Image (cartoon, rainbow, N blue to C red; front, side, top):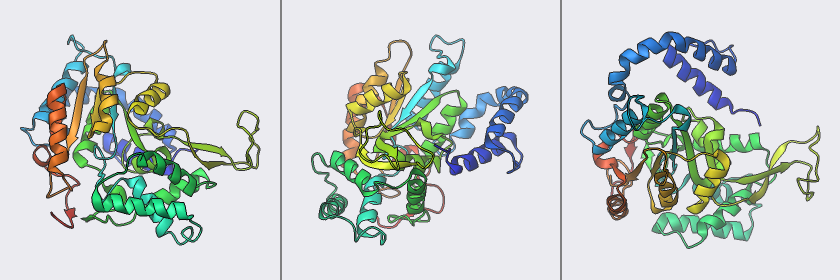
Length: 378
C-alpha cells in the first residue's frame, strides 16, 4: 500500500521545524529521514543543552501546577535517565493511546466513524439511494445515540460491520480520499475548526513529548482502522502502521468469492474493501490485537473510559519496567462537551487503581487551540 501523501507533507513540515529551515519539496521523504538522521549528529549537542527545559517548553498547553503534567514529566524523566534504576531502553519505550475521547473529540456529537457512516447513508448523494433499509435503520440509531447519549448493547460491533459493508468494493486510496473529504467539513459542534481538526491539542503535545524522548507511540482504537488511519495521519506525525483499530478486511478487486489462500493477485488487481471486519477492536480485543500486531508490551497507556481498562491493566501488569497509566476526564462543559457524571466514574476508577486522572477543565490551558469556540453550552 502506498504511504499516505498527507503523512509525507507532515513529515516534511516536522523535519523543517526540527532543522530550523525550509525543506525543498523536490527531496523525497525517505531521503529526508536519512538527512535528518545525519543532521542529528550535529543537533544532539544542542539538544542536550536544552534538555533541562525541554518538557516545560513542549507542554505549554498544560497548566504549570497540573498534577497530571508533573506525573507525566516525572515518569518520563525517570525512565529516560540512564543513571536511574527505572531506566527503560529506547526499544522498549512503548506508549499506547486510545483515540476517541483521549486524543480526539468523541462528543461532536459522537464518534467520528459513527458520523461518517450516518453521512454515507443519509446524506451522500452518490450512495443514499442505494442504501438498504437495514443500513438506514442503523444510521437512524446513530442519530438516536446522538440525541440520547445511550449506545444500545452490541451496537458498537454491529455498526463496525455496517461501516465495512457501506464502502464495500471501494479501493483503499478512494476510501482514504473519501474520509479526508468528510474530515474537511465544518465541525458541527464548534466554531473555528473542521471535523478532522478536533484533536485535543494538549494531548498532541504529549505525543510529541514522548516521541522526542524515544517513545514509540501507538493509537489503539475501537474505530475502523482505515478510517482513523486517514484521520490520524492527517494530524499527527505518526505513520499508518502505528494506528491500530477495528480491522476491515481487504481483498483483490477481481478476487470475488475465491479464498485468499487460493487467489493470486494479478496485474489488473487493486486492493479494495471487502465489506467485512475481522474483529471489533474493543476491550479485551484491544489487548490481543495489540499483542499480535506489535509483539511487545507497552509501558504507558492513555485512555478515557471503562472500555480502556483491559489494555490499561495489560500495560500496568508489565513486570520488567516501571509503568504509568493516564485517563482523560471529560469534566469541562464550557470548552468541550463534558459530562460530570462520566468524569466522576473515571476519577473514581483512577483513585481505585492508582492511575493518573487528567482534568480537561483544570489541567489544560486550551482544548482545541485559539479561535475555537463551542457552539452550544449546556
